[in-house]
Amino acid sequence: MDQDTLDDWNIVILDVRPRAMDQDTLNHLAALAKLQLSSDEMNRFTHSINDILTFIQPLQHIDTTQVVPLVHPIEATQPLRDDVPTAKDWRQEAMSLAAASEQNHFLVPQVID
Image 1: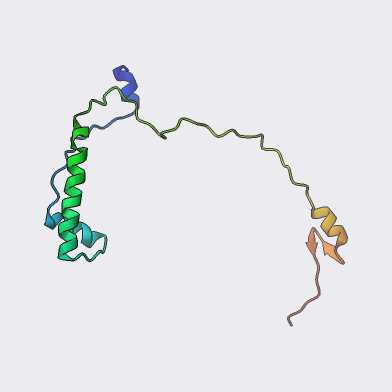
Image 2: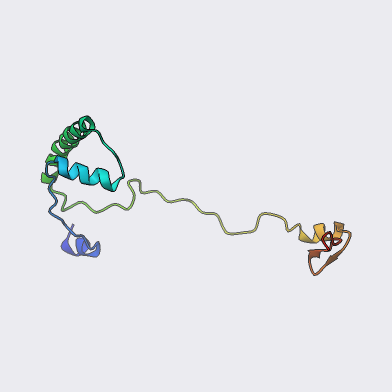
């Protein structure tokens, strides 16, 4: 892939490296999410999030400069049919069955004084 193709995508490469999750950051996130976590949950979530960050850290070293960004993981298109009316226009038939009608509106007796 040449540089022109990459420029067309307006790619912004951020140097984002996962850092360890600490109790203060988790407290802040919990407050933003309006969650109340016990100290046991705080310890458990801190360790779990750090395990996830450690697991994905090797992904930061993969060279993706030649990979074109995807809009969707499956390149499929929806087959479209022609925009042709398929339902019958029942207005005239309904108006012909009405006891009274005027300008395509049903006329009914007044029920509220």
